[in-house]
Image 1 (cartoon, rainbow, N blue to C red):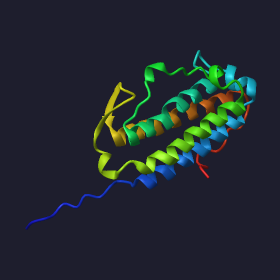
Image 2: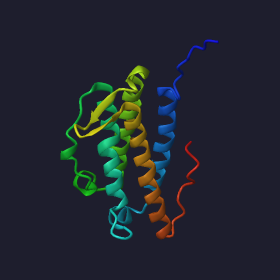
Image 3: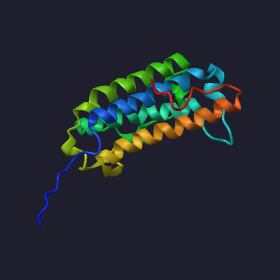
Length: 166
């Protein structure tokens, strides 16, 4: 008996984009829930402010997807994750976050499915397959959003429902 293997993608680029955009909408609502002062100053246990965590997402998510699509990478060693340096207000931070979302929406569909298994050197420093780099970017956002959710609870603010990505 002979069998033939059929290769089917776990998920399409469109599926990944739609799932990630749901996460972006939720992350944006978490940012919006913060009072301005606490967004930049509040922390627990010496961790960074949520604004600085969001600045990290801004620095790597959109540029990371653009790098995967174009093979043109910004130098990650020059990133500053200090939000106040480039986004001194919550509205500035949200505008930069939205620009990152636009980059994701523009460049993720440009990544061919056959490229997903290729090995890349993201930001000139992080080796991995294209798909694993995308998953890392999404996981990193979820991780930092969860930290922001804990901060909101510590501030006595009900965070947006984690399951609502509309």
